[in-house]
Length: 461
Ligand SMILES: Cc1cc2nc3c(=O)[nH]c(=O)nc-3n(C[C@H](O)[C@H](O)[C@H](O)COP(=O)(O)OP(=O)(O)OC[C@H]3O[C@@H](n4cnc5c(N)ncnc54)[C@H](O)[C@@H]3O)c2cc1C
Image (cartoon, rainbow, N blue to C red; front, side, top):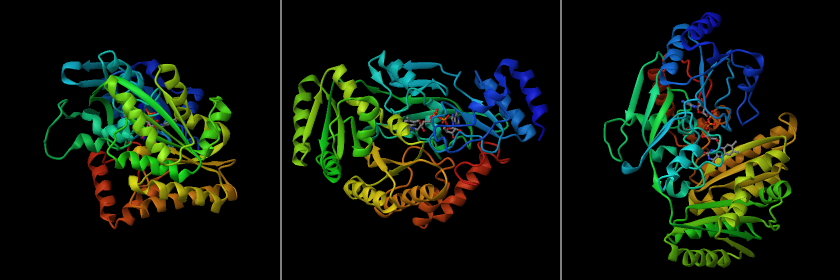
């Protein structure tokens, strides 16, 4: 490996301005939003076309240099951190978007943010179905690679459920289009789906084609507050059990509500938990749906139910959920973020278990998430990433993951594995007695990336 020769070659091929090596540039690319994991790349490339990516992967192959693809850097698991050095390949300048409205499809380059794609679809009366809370920074490439989801997950799933086709560049520079931009296809092994969730370890995504969905005719938003955390979870379960299909269905616990209130002053009452729901449909159906939801919330002893029908009111109560991550991160210098998913019927048990694990290990654990699909994020708030407090936080996080498994769920819903959850990936696969699945994954990695240069140290060692 000779990094200086490789960098010179890349400067010749791409031009000086796309190859960054100044210490301040290298510093900022040494993090993602996990904060806990840090590294320092040897160089950063800002690609502006698929051809640039091809050049980078050819040179990286020739000199055996690790490549860490990067979008918005909003990953919460260390997945975009160059822990072993290498070249960070920043795709954000590749951000063209085209809506094929007659076909119900959007094509977007890897660096477009999810929000930009959504805004483009809205010009035509459609929306992008996947909506991570980080949509303003999360890119299409990063969100495919992490198989991200979001608030509308209970109805539309994660990125892989909207993905029709993907263009990837493999180590060595081969460009492949996997899948076609149509709603149905059966072409043998589903390789586009293999790229979703691959976290930059199999190929560099340069563009994707996705299903889009019509904008609702009308929206209504409801925020209900509860004195008992289990009642809130039971209300979520009952909404799904009675066959209702809200656009979003979110859970927030007391710590989250207090954090949001202390930072953003939205006028939220003190409560053990809150549930946020969006209902949508034809104009005349909204009042009826809101009443149905209100009745379920009251059946489970909600002490306050706020309804928002205007954009201003809706934005205010949406902030309660949207601001959860930034507010919690502001309160605690270090957070361990969990990302479990349980069967919806087990939500009440899961939220109760989280609270007792927090007491057992004497650490504050906030629970918040897209609970309409069984997904909960836990934030274990700590003052330091070392010593006894850190150990207690890690043990609490492990116990939460184990309970999720015991309830028939998963340790990883939508944030990916990265560095943080490598041991949990192994734990879950072993828990199911399917160790050989790990070996299959390793073999797949070797087929796509025989020299192991793509995002090394992520997913598994
Ligand atoms: C405040 C906040 C809220 C969040 N809310 C949500 C949420 O609601 N739902 C959710 O799912 N996630 C959420 N996340 C996590 C994160 O935003 C998502 O995982 C997001 O999809 C990552 O996109 P990114 O562009 O930032 O990717 P990055 O962090 O840049 O990269 C993530 C992974 O993708 C790989 N990658 C990036 N671009 C490419 C490419 N072009 N080709 C191949 N691999 C690539 C990287 O190597 C890395 O492994 C949140 C994060 C924050 C900070």
